[in-house]
Amino acid sequence: MTDATYQMLWDCKFCGQKKLLGLTHRFCPSCGGPQDATSRYFPPDAEKVAVENHPYVGADIACPACEHWNGRASKCCGNCGSPLQAGKDALLRQDQVHAEGVDAPTDTAQAAHQDFQVPGTAPKPVSNPPEKRSHLGCFLSIIAVVAVLALGIFVMFAWKRTGAFEVVGHSWERKIEIEAYGPGRKTAWCDEMPGGSKELSRRKEQKSTSKVQDGEDCQKRRKDMGDGTFKEVRECSPKYKEVPVLADRCDFEVMGWKTSRTLSQKGTSLKDSPSWPRVDLAKTGTCVGCEREGKRTETYTVRFVETKTKKDTSCDTPQSTWSTLAVGKQYQGTVSVVGGSVNCDSLKPK
Image 1: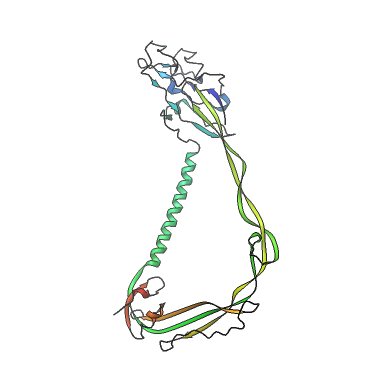
Image 2: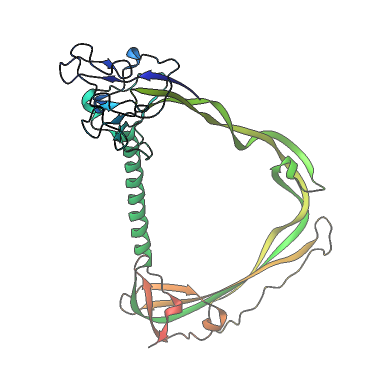
């Protein structure tokens, strides 16, 4: 970060002389009128006047008696001689910020009265605020629309009504997965392959991304010092870009268990007592082609007809519930407005 000191400008309100120097011209060289600290403003880039070896002692102070502006080092007013202990500090212009390589925003004496910064407070950001607010507004609008849509979908699927249902049928199914031991083809990052694997091929693929510095984003900040000068500071922050991180991706063969077939047993009424399918394994043990039982699953489905709409619906229940819902029995419960599925947990005998 580097900085330099330059003179503010001011316009004489007595004779209209413009672009007088804030530090050099304490009085108007045309009419002798005193400088008004509230009329100082930042100059265009092409009209900056540098200040060399300026001993900064603080913001100017206004005389409590005649309101004449005096340098901070003064003890008594240079216009009326009154002591300055009770005088007020000059208000500071808000920092002016602009991107490096872009001319400073146009500043005028009229604008100087509109954007003072209260001493002791942080400067307000002034670089492109309308655009930032616009982007934020668009983002919030999108979020609001998505939230409304999500709420509508949730309400649609959560919306339920009551209905009367009659049991018209049952079905059940039990499954057993049979796993076989043998070579299986898989893909993984090469450094994550399990032991005992046989590599078949490898290739480069993007595994992740990494941030690397890609230059800097720089801006210039002008800071009113309150004594007729301003400091121009160059502020830079690193700029980053995402770059792909490549790694070796491998196809490999590894010995293990995988589902080779599924056995199934079904029934279509309460009279068909649920049973598991018969399991005949080709070979047991841990050898190529050996088999073992895998996961077991069971499903018990009850079919209903809604007495008012005559629409068919069904639901899956635990076996203990399924076996108590006899054909012809009627129940009161809730049904989804969207889809028409009955909520079996809500069923109560009529």
